[in-house]
Length: 190
Image (cartoon, rainbow, N blue to C red; front, side):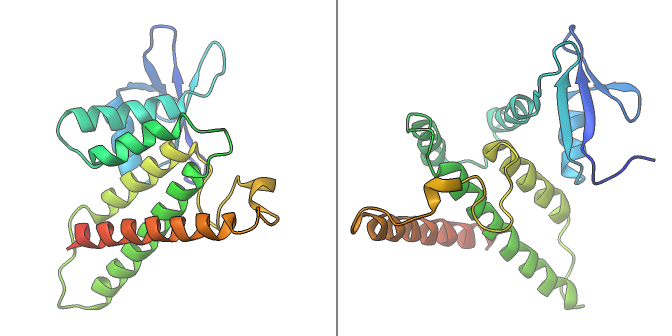
C-alpha cells in the first residue's frame, strides 16, 4: 500500500507517455488531475534525465481547464501573473499568492466546519475536490514552497529594516491588496 504522505511518482517516458508507478499503468493529464482532486500529491519526473516536470504539467492542467471555459483565474489576475515574471527574482508575488491561498483555505475550512457541525445544513458536494484543486493550484503557482507558517522562501530579503518609510508604504499596499482579495473571495463564496 502506498504512503499517502509521499507524492505519487509519475514517470514521463521518451514517448511523452505518463506512467503511474503505484498502479503500474499509463495515465493521462485528466487522470492526474483526478488524483490531485482526491487529495493526492504527485511528482512527475522525466525517466531519462530525472528532471522534475511537476510544475510544467500542473500548469498544463490549469491551462486546459481555463481553455475549456472552466475559468477560475480572472483576466486581471492572469495579467498580473504575467507582469510578475518581469520583476526581479526577489519578487514577493509567490509568497503573497501562497499566503492568500492559505488564508482562503483556512476561511473555507472554518466555513465547512461550521456547516458540518450544523446537522440542518446539507453537505456541499465537491467541497473536498475543490479544496484539492486549490491546493494543487497553490503548489503549481508557488513551485511547492507551501504557505504554512508565514511566508516561506523569503529568506534574508524579508528580514531587517527597509529604507525609511518605504517598508510602511509596501506593507500598506500589501494589506490593501490582501483586503481586496479577501473581499473578492468572500463574494465568490456567496
